[in-house]
Length: 143
Image (tube, rainbow, N blue to C red; front, side, top):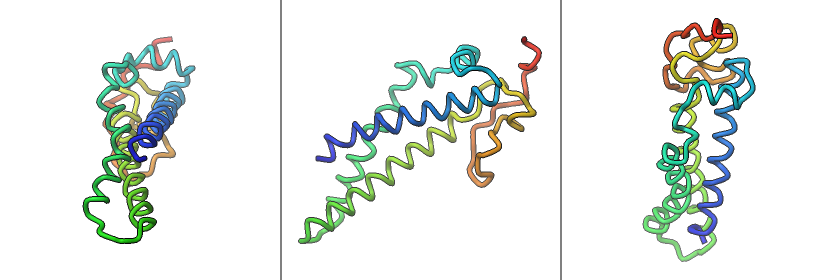
């Protein structure tokens, strides 16, 4: 069952992460998301460039469930299913967090300092690391 549900959950999580990343880039650049994406020309949204992350999303839940099945030895089937689901969701959340920390900041300094100080959106928790976007590239002067 996990191998049927896992890819669906993975695709949903990948879609949500992509939406959050593109809307953050759009907000940091103060441009519509499609224009922001075109300016950054980042491989995160190419099919080939996104394939490893897509595979990680689709495999996280099933592999978490499988790992739990190998570790938890209980006669109660409900306990095993609930534990497997929790570990699978934690694995999926971990992939989501890695994706955001790696891709949330607009690449190559393409951001407005006033909207995203140091390329990090103001709502991002300070205790979580995020990829360094670099110094502002003079993006605001490109008209």
